[in-house]
Image 1 (spheres, rainbow, N blue to C red):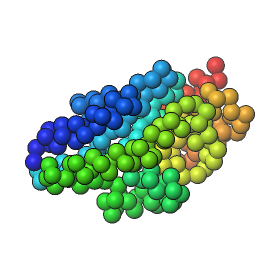
Image 2: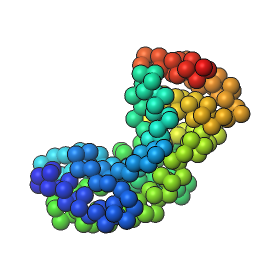
Image 3: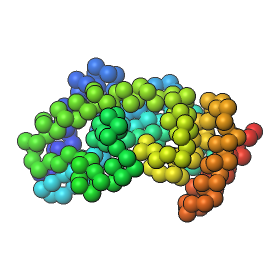
Image 4: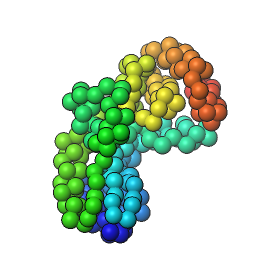
Length: 219
C-alpha cells in the first residue's frame, strides 16, 4: 500500500465537498483549505505511515490573520489560532469530555482512523465527511473571528483548553485576542497569563515571545 495512492484516493472523496463549500484541495499539504479576508481555515489530515497500515488524524484548523501577524512581528511562529481533532470534537460538542479525554483517546487510539488497504478509504471518507458536516463546519464558523476566540480562551482562562497545543500558546492567543477585542478584563488577564508563564516550565522561545508580545500590545 503506497502512501501517495492512499492520499490521492482519500482527497478525491472530498472534491464535491470542496466545490460545494468553496474549499480548495491542497495535495502537497494533504488538506482542504479555504482562504478568507480575515482568516484561513482547513480540514487537515495528519498521519503515521507504515508499509501495511496508516493512521489518519483529522483536524479542523483556524488561523486568524490579525493574531498571527502580531505573533510574526514579534518573531513567534504560532501554529494555529484554534485547532481540534474532529473525533475529539464530537465528544467536545456533546460535553462528553474532561481534561483527560484527549490523552485517553490517544492512548486507546480512538483519535484516528486506521487504513489497512485501499478498500478502507471510502468508508473513512464517509466518516470524515460526517464529522465535518456535523461538527467541523460549525466549529470553523463559530471560532473564525476575534470576539469568539477571546471568549474561547478568556472566559475561563484557568480551564483546560483543548483548542490549542498547550498552556504556552493559550497564554499568547488569550492575551492577543483580549487586546484586539477590547476585553474589559484585559489588565486582569495580562496579570493571569504573566503569572502562568512565570510559574510554568515553558521554553525560552515561548517566554521571550510572550514578553515581547505583551510589550508590543501596550503600544
